[in-house]
Length: 316
Image (tube, rainbow, N blue to C red):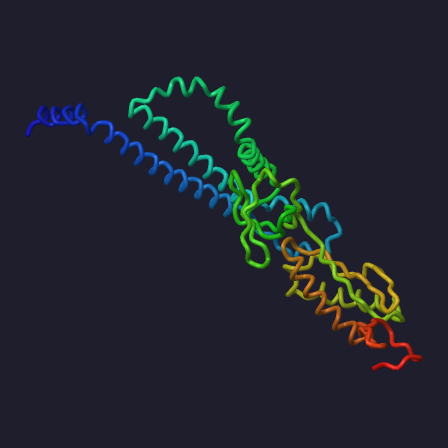
């Protein structure tokens, strides 16, 4: 078989009834391949940017008095979070562009004149303005949140709907997993504010209720001493940035006082730090004879009353 016969066979196939379906199949295959390659390319860029992210030695940041310098260093190290968030958006945009071109090309192959459709883009824009306002708002909000570094993959955020860890930032929604393991899909256009607990540093705050007659000076000495012991413990380098301190009297009730203990902690570690503070500070207070008051309950004439027991009444 010579080349002339091969070329004639190809021309007869192109002129036959299988021409359009063959082209459509090729277009779909090219779209699938382009989608796959774009995803691979974006993943490589994200991984390369993540590898360039320099790790921070939190031990060197502990007990630093220059808060602004520490904040700047922590914010500059958000390359990984931003790269993953922008990579997720780039994948979504690539899929939309590739398959939009593929659909238009397929319409041309089956004989649909796409010229009038493209010329009527202005009318289509008006229709979208009225019928797809929420969709457009979601897309714009998703792009702006990622570009402005309002959140990133792995950040702990409170968006007004849920408090949890960001797992994905897409064009239309943000996927957040709360601390009970429930996955939330929050539309970007509905997020009016974002409280990001993973940028820079944060505080762990713990309150302790103690006996009403407890000595506040002694409480301060015990708490600050325990805070210094925590600061000198290298096992807490990745949790605490400053020594936990006695913050003051938060509340005075009839049967107890409430004192507050605070500590500057590494991003995403505030919950772990709070549990550690409760354990360590409570143990120190117990050793010093400063105990949490017992809730007292008395039953008088069948009714339950809380508070200190009155010596003039008989408890049943």
